[in-house]
Image (cartoon, rainbow, N blue to C red):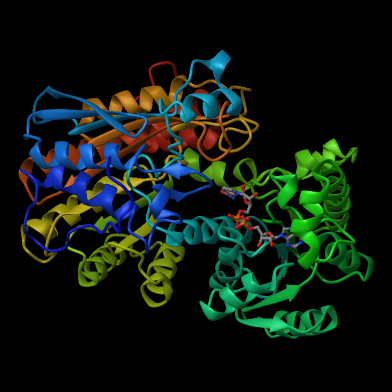
Length: 549
Ligand code: NAD
């Protein structure tokens, strides 16, 4: 039996496997477990609660061994983080096929999953943990930036300059909010009850200043708003107190959202409990704690609805706070929308989603070169250019240097083609892997998040991610995965991923052209089928063939 040890992907241009596609999978699983990237590498946990890259250390070693020996016409099969077979296929087939956490629907509960996991039969793969294309907090930052850019586009003429956003939670995901708001030109007040989280965000330059009091936070915010100057302000406090108080005062707030850990009522600080006493209170009487937390969330959500009534843009940021407030008896909890139907779905209709790539060389200059290529490719896309420039200046790499940017149908394939050319010409020192989150336009069924409120009511139809995966296999992706439960938990989602390698060969060029066209194409297709007019336009303009349109 092997055990925990520090893992780091090899760098440079020398192969440790029998070809770059195999080498890419090998470096990316190791990169997911790099202590700089993973949250709990000793437990093989990459991110998202218990999202793992391999089922056990023995399974990890087995995957590494198999990939090292794998021929260019063979395919490794991985079942929930364990290598289970190698088969002869062909050069166009994926080198790895992955199925993680899947259960027959009637058995798809956390209880059954945990039982099977304790028997060593499965693992939780989250989205990009078990499919080996997680790139650290950069992925979260850009999604949050993109959401706030969509808010700006919808309500404020394309910029948040001269607006104040009120939010809470500066944790792992929520900590990206202050920087995402200022990157869009706005002012953010971020309420957080844990002083260590505030210190960390300010230290890492995700947040600009810490206010000493509510009065100071409001004064700083109003001054910056008047000057149309970006500024992010952290405020120590309980959101269930602060948000209603700001509403009572008639504070000039333009946007309200929340990223406290509301999905778990044991992780939301109730009113009247000091942060220092939170753990003790929770352990003393969990049921009473949950009741208090839910009542506090009801007060918090009621104030959010109050801001919406007063004209602010208000949305749920994927943490189930509306559901918890409703459980506490607050009737208007679902008066404001979730972020996907509100801002992200129009992007999905264009085949846009969290496209990303990593430099297998480990050389940051390779990413700098891809950044320049993106700026040259899309000179008219100002928000994209702003993101790429700011990311180049402000994003610290974790593990292999990487970049995320949301690109759509007709864009991703162009990026793939150019990157492959740059590798072929030696302007990039080693191959680039290109992949995406499973939270993408055509690759997920998740009725509480990505497919909430579909126009035709098809929220829970899970044929779409399966078709997406099969099409990516047929199109030449290097590895393809089908998962269950990522993002929102067991029983609540089915989703698929793909990763391709630009190794500079003509074969890679052909595969990239097909995969990076077809993969976002399934997003356009899915949204045409659901009746979205924008998707129909995109399909017509860009030539996506939909038989029944
Ligand atoms: P986290 O647990 O790291 O951070 C949550 C923060 O909220 C903590 O710092 C905590 O101190 C703070 N907090 C708790 N109660 C509070 C209160 N009453 N007032 C002020 N602060 C309070 O979680 P995270 O990774 O940042 O995720 C935040 C939420 O977003 C989770 O519910 C998560 O499930 C959800 N989520 C959103 C998306 C998305 O795409 N938007 C994706 C995954 C998860």
